[in-house]
Image 1 (cartoon, rainbow, N blue to C red):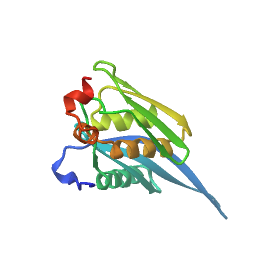
Image 2 (image 1 turned 90 degrees about the vertical axis):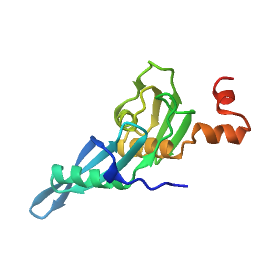
Image 3 (image 1 turned 180 degrees about the horizontal axis):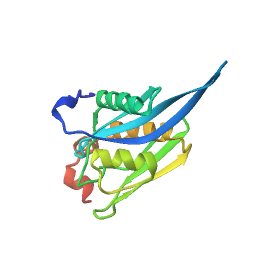
Image 4 (image 1 turned 60 degrees about the vertical axis):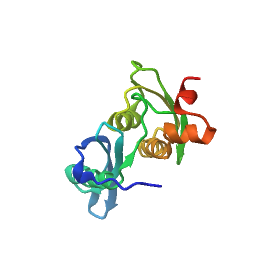
Length: 168
């Protein structure tokens, strides 16, 4: 079911969603480390999410980008929006996404906006409920988009044509 996408043949844009500084307390003081959530996408239905951890910010972003390229998924789009409404949960992060009419824009904040823009979604309505932790919100968004059905499979499941499903 899950298709493997080769990042080498795509023109991917990367966006850093969040950088977090963490401290480890040692005998001589604190030792700081960084983790970075990075999203990559081609702006045409392919998106990936990665988390990188390192002692330097640049290295954490580089590791996050490599991780994101390994986790690429194809998002099914329909006229710049998603084919159906969806709810997704990861940890305490709960995300609701609904398709929107052309011209609406990306009504989303923080991690959800970054993932939607990287995937090439131009019109969507979203709401983040529960945890505002960027890790959980971004993973819930990514999980929801990855598990979303395409228009053809929805029509087949209902025993209708694609036109009947979306135009009444």
